[in-house]
Length: 309
Image (cartoon, rainbow, N blue to C red; front, side, top):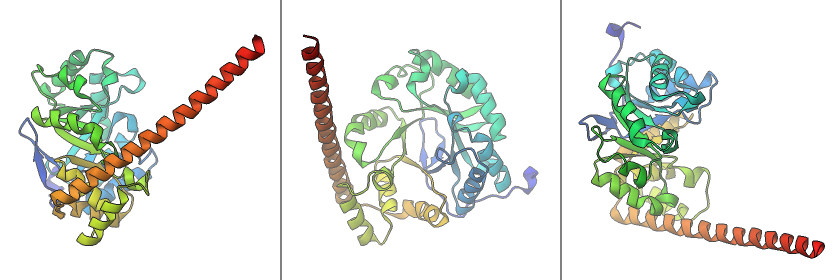
């Protein structure tokens, strides 16, 4: 479709967050992580764009950048109305520059809005050196903004003297991990690094029936919204961008309504406390399991010692 025919698209204007480089990132992203590599991924991205998402989050490692690119073309949405994030994942041992150029070809784009280092281990112990290559992508216009993913404070500390600061750090964030992420979130805030949250719905999708369910369900009932909307509103209350996904159109529309949901400080605190309680329970279970395994190992060793003595 020629650019002249491309339509401007704002069915449900998604609010934005200002990054440290002055650009504004939409606070809700549709992620392609779980979509796989079959053709159906294209339809799912198209569906998300049609529902009103204007931020697509993909990565070299997801192996579906080409399918996301096809969806972007099929949608006919003007390039300037879309925010596209991808990540250098070091796939097949490829370096930063080659990976970025190949990602752009797959996406069918001249630039991405945000390019992230998918994990600190990709730097092979040289985070500043790797970051210099990422900065070059920005200088050369392949990426408008640059950032990181899965970085802890000790990794971010190595970039505090960088000419270009990471604009964002995309991390695992949900109530059950929040207590151990607070210092990282605080550090990011102090240094003007936006936090993006992935897998925020884990308490519902992978760890149901935990302590978080009670406050989330009570808040959902009071506000006449769905539990997943409450969890995403919690992410927003933490000032983070939410990266989420669904193949269900109704659910996508619910996600897009999240910016209109205001949680009270008490709501946020109730979810925080339930999350911390869940984390303590999980830790106690892990400790008990390790103790049992340790005891079993000890018995096995004792048995072997007795057998050979």
